[in-house]
Image (cartoon, rainbow, N blue to C red; front, side):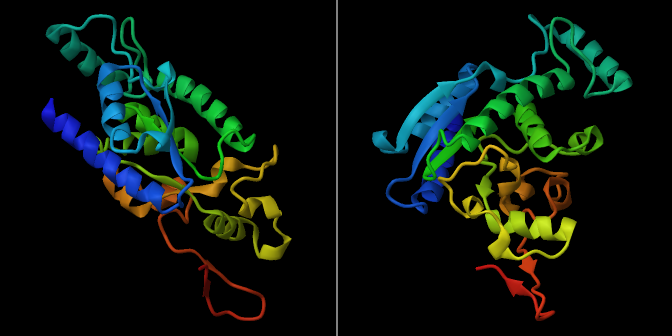
Length: 250
């Protein structure tokens, strides 16, 4: 549909604008659900970019939406929805389909491989990863990334169609969050690779180096900064030992 493709194009323009800020070598690697709607959305996004700026388009079945069964009819679907409310929305498994917990398991598999590839240096520091998926799968991805509880997950609602949700590398925020949890630290004592996008170390906690933007939090009704890392979406301040005056990171 024209409206859907227009939304995908606008999303692509926004993503391309963000990527351009990373310099002339910046490019995108696109993962997508194999379902037609996602593939078409990914095409709309990719077509905004010059061809050389999209290094790869890759389908991954783990990014598909929750399976509600092989075939659906209106009467059965209505009964299933009523039964799901009684049983619990996250754990209810549709006949011949999946529960939210099942989606969590496969998104965990995708995410573990993704984080391993990031940590191993498969992607250069100028690579932006674009994931084109579905509403519930997106929320489960964030649930797994930020270790949300089931109760927290259930209070978060899907964003509008084709609205980019951005996780950005922000080492300074990660260090600020570490300082809040563990006490004072000296930035100079931190491993140098934490500040180098191209450096790798098998033991580092890759997820802790990323935060979700405030504008993305606002796209997800029910999500708060406290649920996704404390400092995410906010300006972090570091206090040194010589002064109680806040020293904002540049």
